Amino acid sequence: MRSAVILLGLILNICCSWAQAVDSVQTPVVFSGVITATNNGISLLPNFSFNKPAVLFDLSVSKNRLSFDPMLRFGINGKPWSFIFWWRYKVVSKPKFSLSCGAHPSFLFRSEAANPPATKSETLIAQRYFAWEINPVFILNQRINVGLYYLGSHGLTSNLIQYTHFLALRSTLSNINVGGGLKFSILPQVYYLKMDQLTGSYMTISLALYKSNFPLALSTTLNKAIKTDLVGTDFVWNVGVNYNFKLRYIRQ
Image (cartoon, rainbow, N blue to C red; front, side, top):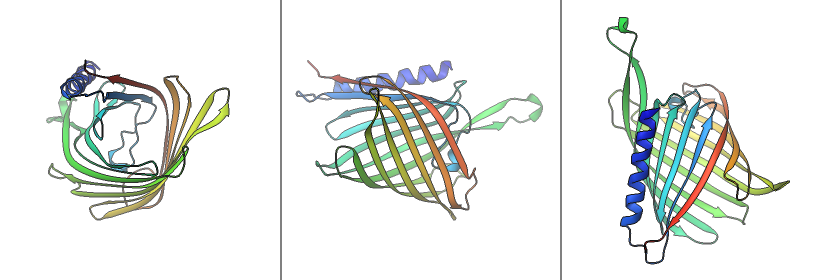
């Protein structure tokens, strides 16, 4: 767990240094994030799922239309699962429509038995990828939006899946009152996935229960295969506890 804390500290230091280096001119730099503890680390790409309890750090430092969004995933024991370092730019930002694009390098960690096996130890292998995305969103009202999401990636390490294409139709329904000051949001999507020559179609839904101006929330994700050639469980789900935060920085 010590290595996870050290890495998180380095990422936070980079984010804060970048925030201080940017000329604010009365436009704040926003540092935000969600820290999630979940019973099951799942991924929309079945081959990349952790399938064990995990802690997820989704961080963001942004100014105007540009943001740096590192996503760090660890096992409960602090063992790395994946690191994704998104750079995103909002090309269009209108009241009824937004369009963003982004790219990232990423690292997926796998454990392999040491050689010779008699040592009963493991070696942590980092598999490298480069990915890109485009995300148009139509904002119907303050609670509902609908959009498309495309993600492509290329494996940079030998013996990896070389090309991945992910295309989703997704929607967000948010700020739905359930009483007692509680609200929930629903994020359903259906998606098509192609990894080299293997293909699959899936549906997923994410739910969150939260309270305005309170940092903790509960969430769950359910992912079901419709038809697939890809390796992975046809149905996976998890539940998580989320801690949300947001800070604004204006350089004096």
